[in-house]
Structures are given as C-alpha cells and as structure tokens.
Image (tube, rainbow, N blue to C red):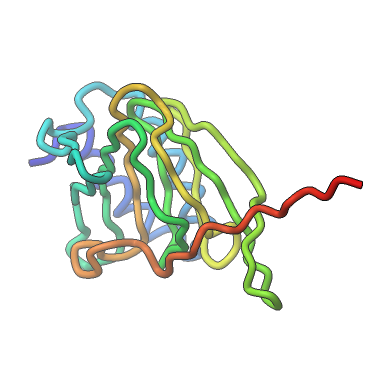
Length: 180
C-alpha cells in the first residue's frame, strides 16, 4: 500500500520518465521531486521501514507497470553497509531518516584498482544520484547511532532484477606510507 505522498510521487515519476529521455536529465529531474517528497509526512507505509538485524534491508515500494523505474526503501541499522558496488542503471537516492556515509571510488581501467575519490555524510533531506558508468562505484554505510531509511529510485524494474547492483568490488588495499 502506498501513502498519498508516495502515490503522488509515482505519478510525477511517470510524467518525468516520458518527458526526459537522457539518463542524466532524468536523474536530475527525479532528484528535484525526491527532495520535495522527503519533506512530506508519512512518506512510507510502516512496513517499508522495518529493519533486518543481519544486513540492510531492501523494501520494494513500487515498480512501474512498464518496468521503467522502481522505488525502493533501504533500511539500515547502525553499522550496516553495502559492499563496494556499481549499478545496472541510473539511481537517485534521498535520505528520509538517519545518517548515511557514502564513499565513492574510481576504477583505473588499466590496473583494475579502485581509488577513493570522495566521502560524504548524507543527512535527512539530502539527495544525490549516480548515472553509470561515470561516478557509479560506491559504498554506503549507516554511520549513525539510530536506524536510517533512504529512498532509492532506479531506472529499471528492481522487482524483476532483485537488486540494482551490477558488480561488487573488493575493498581497496590502503597504500602504506613510506618513512625515510
């Protein structure tokens, strides 16, 4: 069951999907709408905010009837995190409650090594997006002391795929500093 704010958001996603064909433009426009949704009350049905004690939990909130986009709620207990991963499609993320730490990486096409490029702390109301293949590799962790809930809009049918993860990566080995 969708709340009224979520039903309105899904209608907006349908309209935006028809208007913007470019993935970057689509993600940017969805991010504006998601930011507004995060400010609303009663965004999610309570069943979409239940955590799992073993790992972050994915709740499929809505899948477009044509499979063009999905809305997913991710629920994180303190310390839970994703592996380092890339995505199968564009993704817009907004934090509803709690605090999420995101680390982004760049893959060296020659060596296959990951290099950390950015760290961010995402608070309630913060929105960001990823569009493969640029700026697409990251890891997310609940670094707060309470539950965190984020809304993710993906440009595909997550119900069919089961996840937005395209590929996972091993943690990079820190470069040891040399002392002379």
